[in-house]
Amino acid sequence: MLGGLGQELSGVSRVFQEKIEACLNIIVGRIAACMEEAQASGYLPPDADPHHMANLIVNCWEGAALRIRLRTQGLTSLVADLSAIQPEARRAA
Image (cartoon, rainbow, N blue to C red; front, side, top):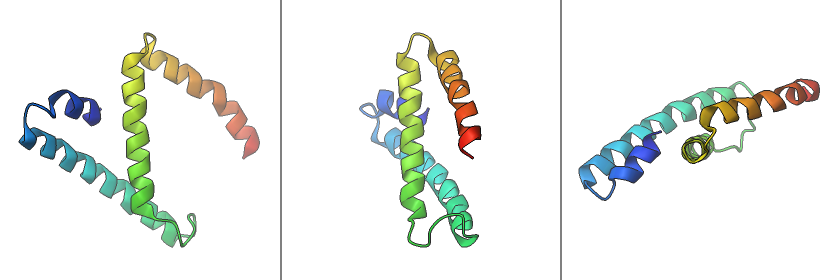
């Protein structure tokens, strides 16, 4: 959601753009810390890059948020999509 705000206002104020980027970096840092814990516990391979993975997660989330805003069905459609794949994920586990 911050990405959309940054997209709207990035041309207006460099300071605002930097603040939004700082907020995104905080989120990335928190996710990367979780990934590092997972790596230390053996849930992620030792050669995985937690910071890169965290950036990917945040970028994917922001992209999904943008796509939701573009859809006429919005969040309801996304929830339905996720509900549809959930049973398959359980079978694979």
